[in-house]
Image 1 (cartoon, helix red, strand yellow):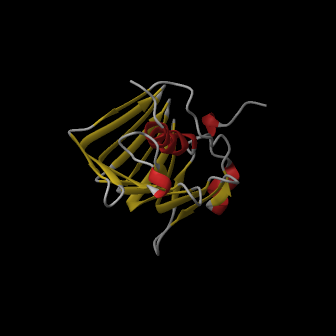
Image 2: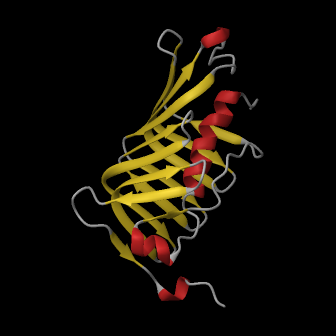
Length: 185
Protein backbone atom coordinates (compact mmCIF):
# COMPACT_ATOMS: atom_id res chain seq x y z
CA UNK A 1 0.00 0.00 0.00
CA UNK A 2 1.52 3.35 -1.01
CA UNK A 3 1.70 5.84 1.80
CA UNK A 4 -0.01 9.15 1.10
CA UNK A 5 -0.31 12.15 3.41
CA UNK A 6 -3.99 11.24 3.89
CA UNK A 7 -3.17 7.74 5.13
CA UNK A 8 -0.33 8.95 7.34
CA UNK A 9 -2.54 11.58 8.91
CA UNK A 10 -5.37 9.16 9.57
CA UNK A 11 -3.09 6.74 11.36
CA UNK A 12 -1.37 9.64 13.15
CA UNK A 13 -4.65 10.33 14.93
CA UNK A 14 -4.85 6.69 15.96
CA UNK A 15 -1.25 6.66 17.14
CA UNK A 16 -1.74 9.87 19.08
CA UNK A 17 -4.85 8.53 20.72
CA UNK A 18 -3.03 5.34 21.63
CA UNK A 19 -0.08 7.34 22.92
CA UNK A 20 -2.46 9.13 25.23
CA UNK A 21 -2.82 5.82 27.00
CA UNK A 22 0.75 6.00 28.28
CA UNK A 23 1.10 5.05 31.95
CA UNK A 24 -0.85 7.56 33.99
CA UNK A 25 0.60 9.02 37.17
CA UNK A 26 -0.98 9.36 40.61
CA UNK A 27 -1.14 13.11 40.00
CA UNK A 28 -3.56 12.51 37.13
CA UNK A 29 -5.67 10.38 39.45
CA UNK A 30 -5.85 13.09 42.08
CA UNK A 31 -6.39 16.15 39.88
CA UNK A 32 -8.03 14.69 36.78
CA UNK A 33 -5.71 17.05 34.93
CA UNK A 34 -2.08 16.35 34.15
CA UNK A 35 0.59 16.14 31.49
CA UNK A 36 0.65 13.01 29.39
CA UNK A 37 3.94 11.95 27.86
CA UNK A 38 4.63 9.84 24.84
CA UNK A 39 2.31 11.68 22.47
CA UNK A 40 3.83 11.84 19.02
CA UNK A 41 2.95 11.56 15.38
CA UNK A 42 4.39 8.48 13.72
CA UNK A 43 4.66 7.56 10.09
CA UNK A 44 7.42 4.98 10.39
CA UNK A 45 5.39 1.76 10.19
CA UNK A 46 3.05 0.43 7.50
CA UNK A 47 -0.59 1.45 7.82
CA UNK A 48 -3.66 -0.62 7.07
CA UNK A 49 -7.12 0.95 6.87
CA UNK A 50 -10.23 -1.18 6.32
CA UNK A 51 -13.90 -0.24 6.15
CA UNK A 52 -17.05 -1.47 4.45
CA UNK A 53 -17.23 1.69 2.35
CA UNK A 54 -15.08 4.71 1.45
CA UNK A 55 -16.72 7.78 -0.06
CA UNK A 56 -14.63 10.76 -1.19
CA UNK A 57 -16.46 14.03 -1.82
CA UNK A 58 -14.10 16.60 -3.33
CA UNK A 59 -16.85 19.29 -3.24
CA UNK A 60 -17.24 19.09 0.55
CA UNK A 61 -13.58 18.12 1.11
CA UNK A 62 -14.47 14.97 3.05
CA UNK A 63 -13.43 11.33 2.96
CA UNK A 64 -15.89 9.13 4.87
CA UNK A 65 -15.03 5.59 5.95
CA UNK A 66 -18.13 3.72 7.15
CA UNK A 67 -18.86 0.30 8.58
CA UNK A 68 -16.38 -1.57 10.73
CA UNK A 69 -13.58 0.97 10.33
CA UNK A 70 -10.27 -0.53 11.40
CA UNK A 71 -6.92 1.29 11.36
CA UNK A 72 -3.76 -0.64 12.29
CA UNK A 73 -0.17 0.53 12.62
CA UNK A 74 2.28 -1.62 14.55
CA UNK A 75 0.65 -2.68 17.83
CA UNK A 76 -1.86 0.20 17.69
CA UNK A 77 -5.46 -0.52 16.70
CA UNK A 78 -8.27 2.01 16.19
CA UNK A 79 -11.84 0.89 15.51
CA UNK A 80 -15.01 2.91 14.95
CA UNK A 81 -18.28 2.64 13.09
CA UNK A 82 -17.46 5.73 11.05
CA UNK A 83 -14.43 7.95 10.42
CA UNK A 84 -14.73 11.27 8.58
CA UNK A 85 -11.57 12.99 7.35
CA UNK A 86 -12.08 16.71 6.67
CA UNK A 87 -9.40 18.26 4.51
CA UNK A 88 -8.60 21.46 2.67
CA UNK A 89 -8.14 21.48 -1.04
CA UNK A 90 -6.70 25.00 -1.17
CA UNK A 91 -3.97 25.19 -3.72
CA UNK A 92 -5.37 22.35 -5.81
CA UNK A 93 -4.75 19.49 -3.36
CA UNK A 94 -6.90 16.38 -3.65
CA UNK A 95 -7.61 13.60 -1.18
CA UNK A 96 -7.73 11.01 -3.95
CA UNK A 97 -4.20 11.97 -5.01
CA UNK A 98 -2.96 12.16 -1.41
CA UNK A 99 -2.03 15.85 -1.65
CA UNK A 100 -4.74 17.36 0.59
CA UNK A 101 -4.03 18.84 4.03
CA UNK A 102 -6.09 17.25 6.81
CA UNK A 103 -7.94 19.70 9.10
CA UNK A 104 -9.87 17.32 11.32
CA UNK A 105 -10.64 13.63 11.85
CA UNK A 106 -14.01 12.72 13.35
CA UNK A 107 -14.76 9.28 14.84
CA UNK A 108 -18.30 8.03 15.50
CA UNK A 109 -20.29 4.97 16.56
CA UNK A 110 -18.22 3.52 19.38
CA UNK A 111 -14.53 4.35 19.30
CA UNK A 112 -12.04 1.75 20.51
CA UNK A 113 -8.28 2.30 20.71
CA UNK A 114 -5.77 -0.31 21.85
CA UNK A 115 -2.01 -0.22 22.16
CA UNK A 116 -0.33 -3.02 24.08
CA UNK A 117 -2.12 -3.44 27.42
CA UNK A 118 -3.76 -0.02 27.21
CA UNK A 119 -7.23 0.77 25.82
CA UNK A 120 -9.63 3.69 25.47
CA UNK A 121 -13.32 3.57 24.61
CA UNK A 122 -15.70 6.42 23.85
CA UNK A 123 -18.84 7.16 21.86
CA UNK A 124 -17.10 9.73 19.64
CA UNK A 125 -13.67 11.19 19.00
CA UNK A 126 -12.28 14.28 17.31
CA UNK A 127 -8.74 15.21 16.36
CA UNK A 128 -8.29 18.83 15.31
CA UNK A 129 -5.09 18.76 13.28
CA UNK A 130 -4.73 22.56 13.15
CA UNK A 131 -4.98 23.09 16.93
CA UNK A 132 -3.47 19.66 17.72
CA UNK A 133 -6.27 18.79 20.16
CA UNK A 134 -7.68 15.29 20.65
CA UNK A 135 -11.08 14.90 22.34
CA UNK A 136 -12.84 11.65 23.24
CA UNK A 137 -16.43 12.00 24.49
CA UNK A 138 -19.35 9.84 25.51
CA UNK A 139 -21.69 8.77 28.25
CA UNK A 140 -18.71 6.84 29.59
CA UNK A 141 -15.15 7.47 28.38
CA UNK A 142 -13.02 4.64 29.79
CA UNK A 143 -9.22 4.54 29.85
CA UNK A 144 -7.48 1.43 31.10
CA UNK A 145 -3.87 0.47 31.62
CA UNK A 146 -3.61 -3.08 32.94
CA UNK A 147 -5.77 -2.97 36.11
CA UNK A 148 -5.91 0.86 36.37
CA UNK A 149 -9.21 2.35 35.21
CA UNK A 150 -10.19 6.00 34.60
CA UNK A 151 -13.81 6.88 33.77
CA UNK A 152 -15.27 10.24 32.81
CA UNK A 153 -17.28 11.66 29.94
CA UNK A 154 -14.75 13.82 28.11
CA UNK A 155 -11.01 13.49 27.69
CA UNK A 156 -9.16 16.44 26.13
CA UNK A 157 -5.48 16.20 25.21
CA UNK A 158 -3.48 19.24 24.05
CA UNK A 159 -0.99 17.54 21.75
CA UNK A 160 1.48 20.47 21.68
CA UNK A 161 2.26 20.25 25.39
CA UNK A 162 0.80 16.88 26.48
CA UNK A 163 -1.70 18.53 28.86
CA UNK A 164 -4.67 16.21 29.47
CA UNK A 165 -7.96 16.69 31.28
CA UNK A 166 -10.66 14.15 32.15
CA UNK A 167 -14.06 15.80 32.76
CA UNK A 168 -16.99 14.47 34.75
CA UNK A 169 -19.72 16.50 32.95
CA UNK A 170 -21.71 17.16 36.11
CA UNK A 171 -21.20 13.69 37.51
CA UNK A 172 -18.06 12.38 39.16
CA UNK A 173 -14.81 11.09 37.67
CA UNK A 174 -14.11 7.52 38.77
CA UNK A 175 -10.59 6.18 39.16
CA UNK A 176 -9.51 2.72 40.26
CA UNK A 177 -5.78 2.26 40.78
CA UNK A 178 -4.01 -1.05 41.29
CA UNK A 179 -1.09 -0.54 43.74
CA UNK A 180 0.79 -3.39 42.03
CA UNK A 181 0.99 -1.34 38.83
CA UNK A 182 3.22 1.32 40.42
CA UNK A 183 6.82 1.38 39.20
CA UNK A 184 9.29 -0.34 41.49
CA UNK A 185 11.87 2.02 42.99
